[in-house]
Image 1 (cartoon, rainbow, N blue to C red):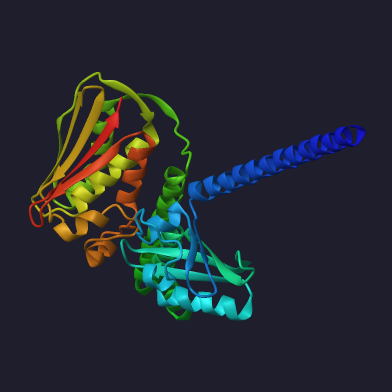
Image 2 (image 1 turned 135 degrees about the vertical axis):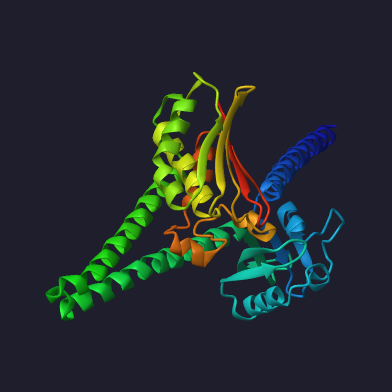
Length: 374
């Protein structure tokens, strides 16, 4: 009887031990499952694409961002050949290089479908479930960074070119004066006038660059105050009278509400309207007209500057507000334009929470409309 009780007690202890082990195992399994779910959740929510490729070439893991990049949809892709899913020879070469060297690498990959973009691919070796060395790929979309870098390069190239032109003219005039023309005032005067003209062009360029830098900043500083709309337009038209007369262009204010006041940065808004008037006059025809109209409706101010000038070809309209973009490069240089005027107009409008629109037909004039919230 005593032996039976001891055996029963041992069985109970053994059973309790098994239950304890089972409970611990279940707890560990739940922890691992929770950890795996957390990792999968992080991978699926990442903006960067993540892929793991086995040494034998099968795709072991892909997150949602990578699926979008390579247009995989939601079909099951785990275990399928990487080359079957991603037809990018450069990426396959990168994978083979990592498998061979076990050294991390960085690569810029250009994609043209389903849309054109540039990816920065970080590749490194990793251990798969079979403890074999596979490849981990992390893909970061740098399309916007590449575009901004190209904009920066273009900007530097354009500024350098715009500065070089007047500086070359000034240098040539100074050298001529130093060589002989200083001793002959009548002969030297044209060179001095050339220096003054090119210096003024440099001044306009630097001034426009400073204005553009201010209005392009992420948080443009607006010195807002009450502005009488009609008074502002009349002042800008008066300031452009001499230029209009020199180009034989009739300049007029056709409509503007009297007494209408709204809050804006007077200097910046005057700059934008002045730039539009400059273009309306300089790119007009002798005997042409430039008209300014303004209206206020539904808490929105619309300022139109219309001309009867040479107009703008349809293919140039999409790029019209780019920095240094010119429709007629030769004429722009003759009129002393910096190529920044319309870009400044656009950024001034956007800084005030508004926009600028253009309607034009080659040979039949243009209409620019500033739309500003009151």
